[in-house]
Image (cartoon, rainbow, N blue to C red; front, side, top):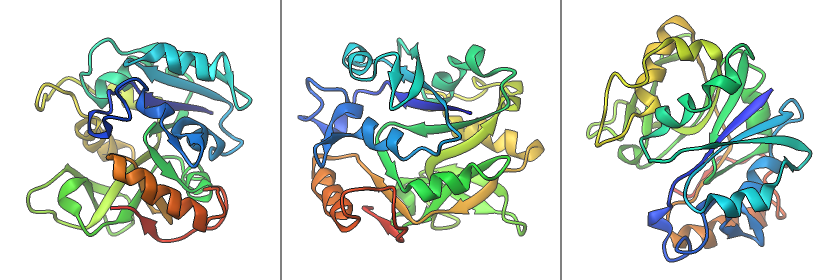
Length: 242
């Protein structure tokens, strides 16, 4: 199973930490975000596709051709045109391969949660938030599958936030990623809504999510990791920094 990790962004909100360092290599508890993320992946994931852009040479030097025992393929995103654009750049590496894991290089998740997500044919991890207007918000069907997903809604229909980890399959490439542009970007959110109508996505509530957006999030993340004895691969806790 492959894992697509989006790591091309400039991490502007994390400045000054990202002025000379790409966000995925910013350290939390003496370890880069990318190291934390890949170490938490289940053994079913045997290869990585890392989408790079900003200061990408540093990421290539850090990860090499094999990272934590997993072969790495790099895909270059020249312009920041959104998450759907980034995934479609990986299309040639995913077509015909079935399921794959999709995630971002700036959030930390519990290993058990990611493993649970991969036990479904298609799924997305979510967590209840007190600030739903800041996230992509999920509404479920009665059977627990995705009914609707709204990016940063002004009037949130629920407080269940998508945390960015999804198990998808190559059927997603049947849909048009460029049908809708928002603020100069093509969001994967719009494609997922259409995809889920034909290919149900299980909404899975997770225990641990640590989004890293601002410099102050680093200290808060380290406090959470300390409570987990320095790892996100162990216990499960209803926890988010937001």
